[in-house]
Every structure is written in structure tokens, then in C-alpha cells.
Length: 357
Ligand code: XIL
Image (cartoon, rainbow, N blue to C red; front, side):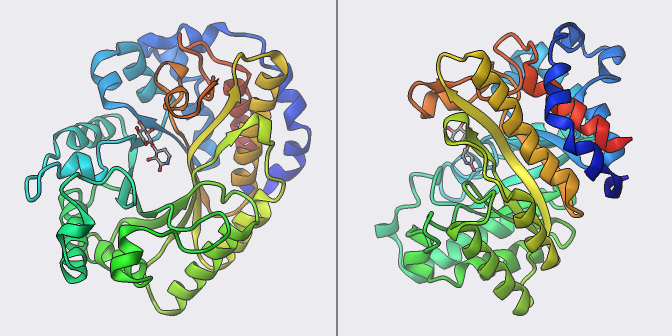
């Protein structure tokens, strides 16, 4: 089906906007009723073969029944927003706490969803005990190796994709200056992939970053890295595009070409953290631009051959990370604080529906 979507997608943006008016069916679907299940994103995506996902906030999943029902109903893959990060799983050195992450993996299994593991190697949200000045480079290498092997082993067989390395390049394509680069040198990336593969040979292993949607110095750096890793036989399987856009910066124009060059290297691709924020307050033009941002990335995914998933970084403004991190910005997800769908929600659903015909 995916080879035939090109023609239909040409007329898509206008169709999606036209169909944005009705707000009733999904807004009322907090109960998780089967009627809603027939019309949600998950059902629309199924015939395309591309999984639709969301980041999951574990506090909301525990406390908010409307949220919980929507995660089950609307999505076929889930990503822990925070609970698989290093500071969450090993807050004290040598003392693991897998409880919250296990709850998500159990929830996903109960709802026939896959899990994107996020993330093994990063410069952010590391535990306080992981102080660079407290360890030698050799110790840091052993610590990183143990972290990767222990975490991937704990979830072995239950993780679809791992974001093995997250945000390892700067915008200009130079390697990001992190505790790992400084102490282990650039070879830490290949090591991380080898260790993860050793611990779970079935999991698909991804690089992941933001501002890498189109062709630019950062995505060029990933292209060179991945080509090199492949040439060396390093087990890298996927290129992850976070997809954190903002309407005031516009949408990169060459997303599809970027996906295709990575896929030509033999990689899968995935949109891993999509949201489209705006300067507040929202207005109709921003809301329309937002829908176009979401659909531009989904169209690229559906038009390429090996894009396997499209994950939102939260689906409701009630729990979005955006207002807490970007001053004066918000409204970044396809549903408002009361779970009412915005034009972006219908645009995504209609895009999947067209592609699945
Ligand atoms: C964010 C979470 O959404 C927040 O709750 C947390 O406070 C900080 O991290 N890129 C990533 C994600 O890879 O892990 C980040 O998630 C958002 C940016």
C-alpha cells in the first residue's frame, strides 16, 4: 500500500484542514470505548504498517484514567518519557530501580504495543553520582558498559527499538562535548552499539537527535557516522528524528530526501519525539501551521520505504514538557489540556487513512 500513496498525499494538507471541524468523536473517547477505537490514530495507522506512538508520563498513566485510556486506544508503540533514563534506573550507584519502567513495559504488553527504549547514552538526566571528576576514563568506560549491558539485559526481548545514543552532535556537525567524548573519545559510540547488541540481539538500535529532520550539517554528521559504523560492522539499525518543531521556525523542506539517504544505507528510520510548539497565545494560523508541521513529517515517513514509526512526545497539552522548557511557548501536541483534538489530530488521522487505502 505504501508505494501508492504519493498521488493521494499531494492534495492532503487542504483535505486535512477541511476535516478539522468535528471535535466530538475522539474528544468523548476517554472511556476507551470500542467505537472510539475504530476511529482513532491507532486504527487509522494500522493498514499503513507504520506504528503510531507517544511518550508516556508514568504519573499521568497511574493517576489519570482518561489519559490511560487514550494511550491504549490511540497508540501502537510507547516510549517512556523519563523512566528509562539513567538517573531514573540507577539513582544510587549499583542500586537499580526498574519499577516504573517495568510498569510501562507491562502496560504495553497488555495493550499489544511495542516499546521504544529511551535512552542509553546521553549527556543529560544522568545520575548525580556520575561525576566526571570522581572517576578515571577507564572507570567511566566500565561504568558505561555496565549501564548499557545491565539495562538492555533487564528488558531483553521486550524492547522494539533502543535509542542507544541521544544527541551526540552539535548543530554544526561537530561531536558534542560530553562526559563520554571527553573521557572515552569518539569510539564510545561504536562501543555503545556493540554492548547493546550483545545484551539484546533482537532489539533494533537507533541514533536519535533533534534538528536533524532535513539535510543540514547535523544530519550530514549522522550520515557520515552511520556509514562509517556500517562499514566497520557495528550493529546500528536506525536513524531517529525527534521532530521537535516550532511553527515560528517553519518546516524543513527536504525531510523525505534525508530519510531516503539513511534508508539507502540500509537503516530503518523513525520519528521519535514529535511535537510542534508555538508562541502563546495560539491563534488559527498557528494552529493551521502546526497541523502542517505534524503532517509534513508523517507524509515523509509514509512516502519513504523504511520509516517504521511516528511517535509523539506526548499527545495532550495537559502533560506536555514544552511550557516548562520553552518560555512563552506551548500548545505543542495534537490534543488540548482537556483531550479535545486539534486540527493536527485530524490531519494525522486523515494522512494515515489516505495512506492505508
Ligand atoms: C524531556 C522530558 O519530556 C521532560 O519531562 C524531562 O524533564 C526532560 O526531558 N529530547 C529527548 C527527551 O531525547 O528525552 C527529552 O524529554 C526531550 C528532548
